[in-house]
Length: 529
Ligand SMILES: C[S@@+](CC[C@H](N)C(=O)[O-])C[C@H]1O[C@@H](n2cnc3c(N)ncnc32)[C@H](O)[C@@H]1O
Ligand SMILES: [Zn+2]
Image (cartoon, rainbow, N blue to C red; front, side, top):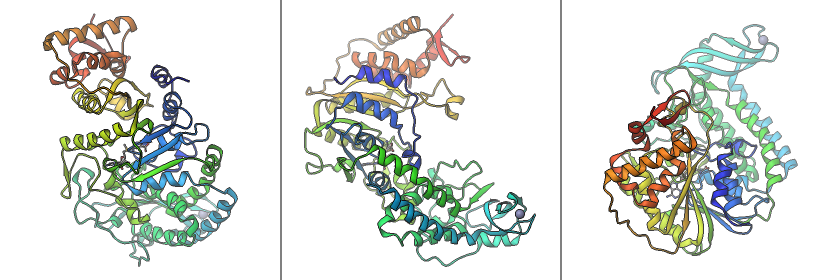
């Protein structure tokens, strides 16, 4: 079937993005992309046997989807850090479910013995029980925890709550000798609420740090399954650290001061080990052993001709690190301590100003430019480059589209993917683009030409407003993402006006505020009455 951006866009409009299935539920990664959107891009913009490449692989959705036996593309992914690469390589293993079942049950019975650290007497019937979670305050990371509540699982009375006593405190806070884990120092970064001198063990209770130490020793008894069990451990470490009552602390190196929660780490890991059987079943169903892929472990600005031959890539789908939004390499400190997985601060593409490295916005775009220049060499003419992006700032759009243009990637269009309601959307539907956009570029053989613009900014503005008004008259009220996707960005780019407009207006929202009414009832822009 011919490759077709219009059809891809239509299908994206009608698709509720999903990240949930037994494969993707089995790990956690920041800004993991929906697999069913990757599927549309792969189906519509590549053919069987073609090469699909992601220079910022992360947890690998692009590659994992591309090499499914349903699609049989050749996948290439480049990623700077080892932890996400472990995610991808583990999911691409060939599995024997029975063997996994046997080994994992053995591991579970060993790990269950470590549950002695959580022993507690049921306050109702006196039975020997296990603490399931403890809630406490921790005014600072050096302080002694002030326990508030202990929850336990009694074999007879089931879920029970008790008020904490000194034994609860001791078993949570006693110092233990560690056999494997080290109290590694963290790299200070005020943006992540991490300060010089703090150590990794301080974001865990002493008990859970010790329990994880022992779990790791159990895992080491299974060398042939070590990477798989490590993968599982990696998917739960953030739950075993001190968390908040909603266990949704997104910052992996952060802990609250009040209402801190310690969960029974043995319970968490044992459940995950069992659940992984579902993952294996789905992996077996979706992949065959002949799958073709290549994982590159380096900064993608260093990809060379041995890594990927020139003129060989058919489709790129990628989600570049976005300015300073997520400090991926620093987050990976969590996995270095427990799994020995290395991270790379030196070559990471990010805007940051920690003491150990400083990269400003211009340097960040220069690095991205290097990567896009490599993509230009590797990609066949006519191939598509799909880039995830989420920002309403017109100058960022302009910068990115210009850099891409200079590397022979011609802007074509973009589409916002739907998003289930997040807090951000609810608070600010007007400003928020309510989810990621995918910008489509096509690799051309023509060199980029700067536009000669004869119109004044007032003329440009008049034209843009006329265009938006036409859209509102034809289609009725429009949300902010609908304004962006409904042809305005295309109109600006094709006329060469994006830069001028971006100098006057930060975003299209600012422009709309001046000329249109915002209807908070339907969260849409409409023509002034
Ligand atoms: C936004 S994430 C990609 C997430 C991915 N789309 C997913 O579904 O999981 C960006 C990734 O780029 C990686 N990264 C940062 N600098 C890099 C570089 N110079 N070369 C390759 N990867 C890099 C980060 O470690 C991070 O995993
Ligand atoms: Zn009881």
